[in-house]
Amino acid sequence: MPMEANAVVWGSLLGGCRLHRDTQLAEHVLKKLVELEPWNAGNYVQLSNIYSASHKWDDAENVRSLMGERGMTKLRGCSWIEVCGIVHEFLVAEGIYSKLSELDKDLRAAGYVPTTEYVLFDIEDEEKEHFLGCHSEKLAVAFGLISTGPAEVIRVVKNLRVCGDCHEAIKLISKITGREIIVRDTNRFHCFSGGTCSCKDYW
Image (cartoon, rainbow, N blue to C red; front, side, top):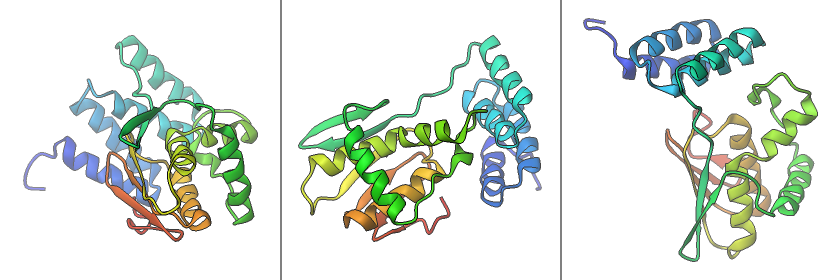
């Protein structure tokens, strides 16, 4: 480049690394981002996640410890949905496990298998599947399904990037239920309809 790359450029390169699953380059990119934005906790979290995805548990823990030493905390995943003029916020399950359980059965019948690689903790696969089922966007979608009419579009806002497993699950939910579901995450709008997403799985 004819000029010094800034955090936006490095962030764009990181997106390409994530898309092409180039963890080695992503690790280098994230280290540069940490240098450029030492106050941005999200960069540390992403670096820790890359280590975890590569099963480098000690390196991941070291990054988390460094965050603690610097007084940084991970932004907690949160989703919002508006129903009848009231905005509902989802951090944890709020009595909608029965709907999630029903959706899980339908999803598995449609061929869905939880993508446990998106749970970046050193735990058993069964526990990973439980964590994936409790993601805030899935909770918000389930709440939307039980709280709105069959022809209404479900609109959810997410404060973080939607994970790959939730993306796949919501595509199938739109097919199973015949509902249009729109999820706005930190990167883009995702319009799920008939089992596909408007992002063409680029997200």
